[in-house]
Figure 1 (cartoon, one colour):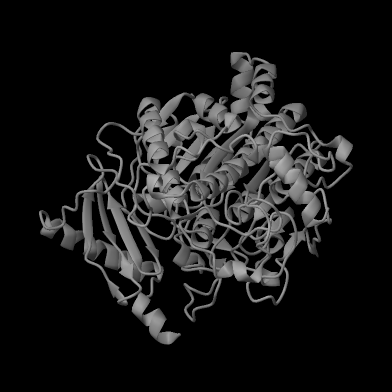
Figure 2 (spheres, one colour):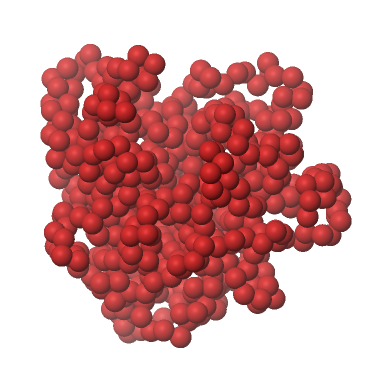
Length: 574
């Protein structure tokens, strides 16, 4: 469909008309489209759960001895409050049901940005130990080489070592060289967007117009069709395809389902956008307040957590013209639609598991790779078509700082920062056969904990050596005690570093320092008591200078151990 036809269809759907009928759905199924499960959400999921047969006590014990299937779902650039069970107005019935019947963590952390989070999540190490201390560019240091090194083992390699079939569908972004692709890091089958996110509708050149964004299906390059293609649906479809093809196998499986949604560009299907257009005309201040109040009622936060002020770079909503308000409303409507479509895909995966009889023996985890993204992509968009309606194939937009501030309610800051707005993620664990659901866990968890947790669930071992290389010990701890209602015994603090932004958390104390790119200097260390100030509004560093010095010393020892290189050294080497 050309851009004019898509525009007519897009506008008709937004206005509530049926449109031309040319595009009932924009997706791509790897097999015959007739075989695709219809896109349904909450009602299907409810039916699936009710259709699982009850187990007798003896059958339960027998099931508990089996290695569980594992599905790890990762959203991209999605904020802490962007799904319903964490306070959002966005329709996410499948994730909400997982949360209702599973467990939610209120203090779970990522690494503040995509590549470091993915490398840490996949290896159980801090990203510097895995070779991805920054992004995918080689900065001239082993800890910043830009791709997974051979001195780490991935979840796929570790689980495959322990008898699992392994699949990945979605975003990779931890190396593009042949030796670093998923097939070389333990995955049996894969459908992968190799770099970061680009157009959801078509392959287009990168920002330098040198080559099109690379997507691979197993070991071959994948070329999307000219129509009936939408990346989020393709990621779901290939995950379903992998599950269907292994349905007769008895071995357990690990599926890493890494959606690019809702990472920019803002691209969504008209039928999904239509659900949200006009709903954001009330503005970001009111939306943040409404989310905050829902979060309090849900128990995701308590009254000690205050709503942070509107970000300084966000104007007052009432200062905008009506045209500007409509533009901002459209941006957030598309962003919401992207999350909605991801949730629909998760519902399809759950339905497929039920049809295969695998749902009752499957652990499902969900989280995001960083907080909401405030990035301005106007310069980047010059390399792409930007003439279409926001959300259409010929547009290239991000939702901006004001809406990212809403995504990260009630916290400050955004993706790449190590304040709570950059590193806090919703985290859901669902496995009714092994985990008593309906609980909220307020103990801190971190992506480095996923490797020990999944291996304990799988009854597997973490290798000391792999492919002739000595592998560092895991940095995290198993979350299984917390999932069973017990306290976690974490002996070491948690740490963060990205482009000079630094932090550590020890018990309820958090130390934070921001690197000022304009002055090329570190800002003063800040100290927060997260027990009474999760939103990091009251800096206590001047009140507890001895504690600050002790924590700085701990941070420096950690930084030396894992291979952190100072921002000044990296800048001077460029």
